[in-house]
Figure (tube, rainbow, N blue to C red):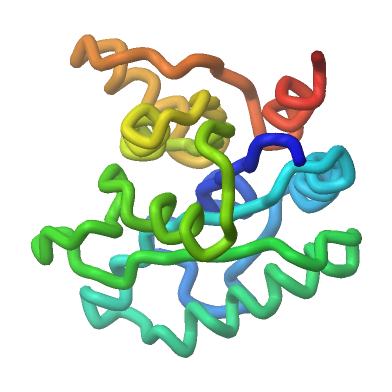
Length: 181
């Protein structure tokens, strides 16, 4: 099996919203995103989505709302041939100081344990917290410039934070990067 690919959701797979993605009708995948993920899976990479969903902890939406959104996401992935994607999310408010909110490694640790994943792999995200999660988890990091990626790259640069291993335009080009030997 090839190394697993961990992906952030909002801003990577689907459009990010300043007011949160709260319903299935607000979940809008980026063009080519589902096909790109399917190409990774066909090549033998396990797909794991790791997403902070603090809107639950903030009382903006419920865990049931997130589950409905993930049902739509899973249906889109399954229609593209990805039948075993795993989704992990952190429902906590940022002030809760939990072990699962990115950049903490709880979601990756849980996935590795539950899915018997090898160490190593890739982290595709649009935020500095995704890149930090990747570093802490021993993953090769790919910052996509979709979603918040461009402003997050400015933050990384201006605050002299560690640079991602790779920077690409989108999850489509991130998949191409991973699939190119």
